[in-house]
Amino acid sequence: MKNRLVITVTFLSLVILGGGALSLVHAGKTGIELSARSVTPGATLVLSGKGFGTFKSTQFNRVTVNGVLALVQRWDPEVIEIKVPFKTTSGFIEVLIGKKKVLAGFLNLTMPRIETITPTEAERGATLQIAGYHFGLSAGARDPNTMFGVNDVLVGGVVVRPKRWKDDKIELEIPTNAVSGDVVVRLASSDPLPDGSCCAPVEYAVSNAVPLTLIPSIRVDPVSGPVGTKVVLFGQGFGHTKERVDDAVLIGGRPATIAQWKDDVIVFHVPLDAESGPLTLRYQGRERVLAQFTVQVPRVTSMSPTSAPIGTLLRINGEHFGFYSESGSTPYNFMDFNTGENRVEIGGVPAVIYRWNDDRIDVWVPFSAQTGKVIIYRSANTPNIGGLCCAERGTLATEAGDFTLVTPVIESYDPQTAGLDATVTIKGRGFGTFLKTAEHADFGLNQKAYKRRADVEINEPGESPNVISNVSRTEVLFNGAAALVQSWTDEEIVVKVPHRNLYGIGKKGEFFDNLATGPLVVRRGSWDLLLDGTCCSPKKWITLEAGPFTIEAKGLPDTGYWNNNRPDAGTNQ
Image (tube, rainbow, N blue to C red; front, side, top):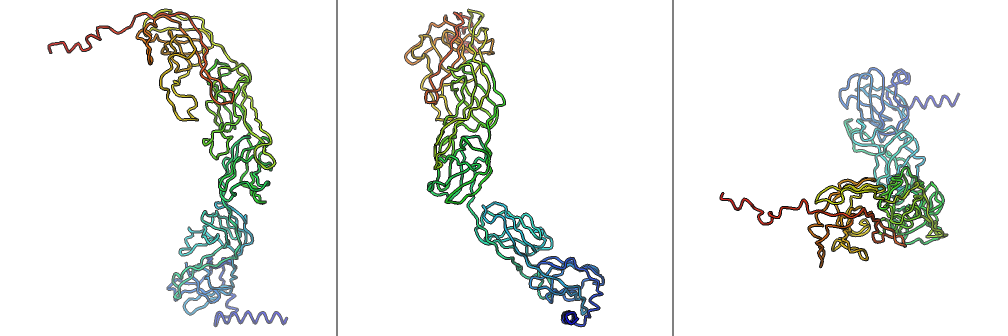
């Protein structure tokens, strides 16, 4: 009973000191409701009741929190809205209307506190979550009630506007200009000037500080691929060389093969036994997970054609083939163009790679190709105990399908003699498709600079004295001179009789002027890879002779034209 009496007297004293002549009984009968009983500095507080009257001036209409003047944002007969002042403490709220004082209730002032941040070590640009309490409710920079200050977070001294803000949780993105340091939550004030008008300079209620360590950002490129894929880590602070045996890059807990280790870049290859999992950098005894790496398995969805002669472009569609020239140690494939053991074999014979993308591989059927399986080989290895190359070198084989090599056969041709520009039809089977290419340029333009030959090859060394134009890989020749192809299907070729045989063909130091009669030839060309796997042997040909053909002297220009090529010049006009 004694304790209860002491409490009552203390409470009454507070009422008398804070409210002058306001009695305890009167305070209980005001009927004013507060929107919250516990708030943070700068929070918006709504007082609901009756008899507030209309607003006259900042001197006549005032609200205090434990004796400290608050900024009034709204004053209606039944609603008052204020900003909790920055310099106040827990205490009673009083509404002052002229000389009248009305006690609104007791308000508990709370300060923001951070319990944890996640993670405690992060890269710039990463998402940081702050857990705690009494952060208040903030609409950020768009808050219409916060005109002069915005609640924010300091990360290493840098102001950050969070993406999400709740009373117990804040989420933000660490800015690129942040540095390692303390994370602090700040609540902005909205206090009035001494006369009650708006607004005093902004001040901040600050939470406790929690340290955050920022680590250099590391870019991983790519984060998926088949075995043998070249992966590059771009960053800083890796060290100039791989100094320790246990320094490594791990994929799913298994070491990758390090090809290059420098202070700002690490190049490694996905090993043969790799499995999907976290990609982890282990350096100087510390491990850091950089990404989730997906080890992909090459898969073929289609191959066309499944039967064709040499020189045909074979197209293999699918996914996860990787890229052709990524077996080197440089960060970029084009710098060293190291293809390793990446290849495609047709019946056990290496094909000539024309295009190798992650979802499509195109190869030329080589001259020595055989009927059999088409297999894609993906080069890879496993590291030695120090993480370098190599404890084992190998390949991952992916079967694309069966291929049948076709040998072209000529069955007939008609006519066997004709004039210039006449149409000649050659029938048979296995001619394949016509290749719309001219090859004055060296093969492999994607690997070396463009080089043009000094002269078109008229005669192949060691071959017959017939004139041969080596500018294509699908040709019809009239006594060595190429004809204009009108159409070319697997069973029929239609060409026009060329002019050059009757006009004559020359090359440096020689001229051929009697080429009207000679063999009619269809031929396809292709190459083979060299023994070291590089491209390519000289072009080789499958040559089919249809029979003799005579070009008649028909369709030649009128010789009179050469004597008088301007008939109008001799007129009297």
